[in-house]
Amino acid sequence: MPRHFLRKLDLFTRLSADDRRALESVVGERVRRIGAREDIVREGDAASHVHLIVEGWACRYKQLEDGRRQIVAFFMPGDLCDTFIDVLREMDQAIGTLTPVTFAEISRDALGGMAARHPRILQALWWDTLVSASIQREWTVNLGQRSATERLGHLLCELFIRLQGVGLTEGNHCVLPTTQADLADAMGLSTVHINRTLQELRGSGLIVLKGRNLTIPDLSALQAASLFTPNYLHFDHVGRHLDAVEPLAV
Amino acid sequence: MPRHFLRKLDLFTRLSADDRRALESVVGERVRRIGAREDIVREGDAASHVHLIVEGWACRYKQLEDGRRQIVAFFMPGDLCDTFIDVLREMDQAIGTLTPVTFAEISRDALGGMAARHPRILQALWWDTLVSASIQREWTVNLGQRSATERLGHLLCELFIRLQGVGLTEGNHCVLPTTQADLADAMGLSTVHINRTLQELRGSGLIVLKGRNLTIPDLSALQAASLFTPNYLHFDHVGRHLDAVEPLAV
DNA sequence: GCCAGAAATTCACCTGCGTTATTTTTTATG
DNA sequence: CATAAAAAATAACGCAGGTGAATTTCTGGC
Image (cartoon, rainbow over all chains, first blue to last red; front, side, top):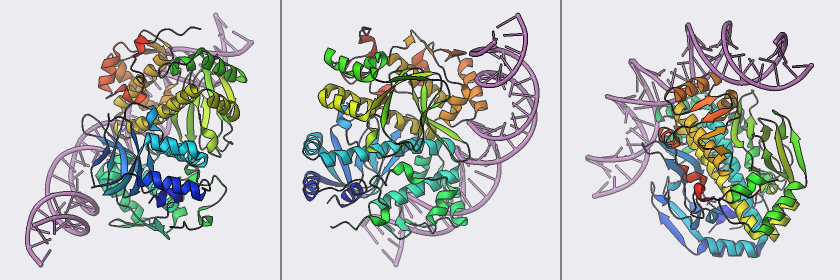
């Protein structure tokens, strides 16, 4: 069940069969499925559960009083939301779906218990949490300094490489299920300008985007154009590269 | 020595005298002082130490290849940088001083050992880490959605309340040691526009700023003008309010 | 109290992106 | 397959904030 999640943790550490079994059982306990454009967690909710995205995309967002919405993070299969959240009392932002989503709802006790019994899993959860924080910082850089083209290009690089990390790319191609309005809310740009910017990226041959199908013909070219460096994703902890990760047994 | 830090943790939990002594000894082990505009940590450094700001201000920043700089976080006395960082291999951003800074350099082993022996401290460190992450997310909202005036007002609210949390305000007044260029780099605006925006905030009576001296005559007015809500700082975990925190014994 | 460099301020002009509105295309749904 | 609703694309115009260049005001060191 937590196929993509296990694959992602593999980027960081080697989990034992026992670890894997424990994870699978905790994750399998309570799995739910909801439609697109619904909330998994609302602002102000008690911080009681951790959620693992099994299928589909979601986002963390904050809605301002006057309606403006900022997406502060995208969640894709394999992503854990609010891993160690139980220390805080209530959620300060909401988590909503962008597509229909299947997710596992994990109680703090179940997660804590497992972490206590499986130190490598605990270590991997920390890594995942720290990487999320690192991504958040990079978003700050992205919104603060980069032009619309660089900014959007940077996001596409990040999403593509993260999808690669959980095995959801095929060659230089992946599925990008967000609408242009979602991208706009994430990048602090208007939908009109997202559209213009996508045209520009298309025009310069850096991306091919038809419907939900994204192809990046030359990832390093897009990276260069977007001032993107992947170090902040910390995918290289154990000194392996993506290509070197053997396919995950399903 | 870690006076402000202890005071901040007090917002979250009640530490025992024993906890406090342990913290003090770990923090006192290696204290250094460096000048303004120097780096404490450079991008690419091994992630070996944790730093506690004892006096002065610093920031986490990232410099793009072409010279643009984004400040992604401000550090003030009592702030811990990269608490659980040892899981990651190398730093993806740098930490530099804005003023002369006194800081404690804590080895991962010393911190880990203490955390293992003092569960309440561990819990408090988690809280601190999660609050930092929450602040980072709010910065994303700030840069993505708010206008220059709201954005800067929001930052000033946050800094003021954080200073309050470590006992560095007097009434509605505090010291703001940043230059306008620093504020510009943090807010993704030009120095010229930061200047214009400060004038505007002054003109509407929301702030009084002379040199490093900042007064906020009516904090709730500034909050309202900036769409600021303090929930993301999670200062209310134990249900107490700032006013109710007794002065810290020094 | 003087001096140099840093910081703040001001000015004039410009551009990247926003806004509003309309049209076209795609995608769900009965 | 028809239809409605959502998403994408296009267009015209406006403004928030950027740029570059002076100028003035602070600040720290002697």
